[in-house]
Length: 180
Image 1: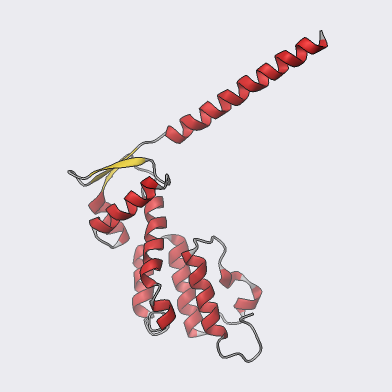
Image 2 (image 1 turned 45 degrees about the horizontal axis):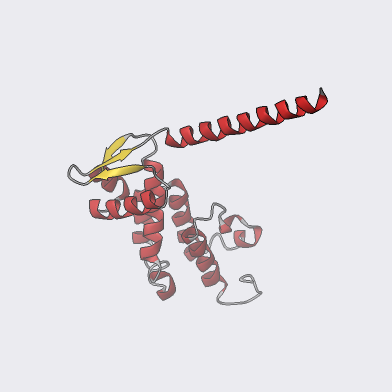
């Protein structure tokens, strides 16, 4: 328990808990627990609170600003420093996934500006998201364009519902036959 009375490592453990939460893409903030509220005014925890806020809001500008402004409390910790690259990638994956939702096509350079990274990094993340089935689309590498296929998940749901309805109809017909 990080909240042991007088334990000097409690702040570090709480910071690591926040880091692990973000890396696991956990939607519940560990800083919202009553035990963590007691430390919300600690400078290191304030930095982590701001970082998790930017992470949850998928705000690339705020995320990078918090990392830059709080280097002493975040990146100077050797344990956290080892995971900053992974944390940035996890953040970019979630932010990219949300950023492409309203589009049927978008330039990779536009996504790179939104995420404050390179088009090559965006392309790498998109490959991962497409292969994992989290984004339904393809990349036109010649034009540097993401082409999204909308409605295919809706079509799959429709097919599943149609199959379900046919099975219910067959069950009703067989049940009706038993009654007559």
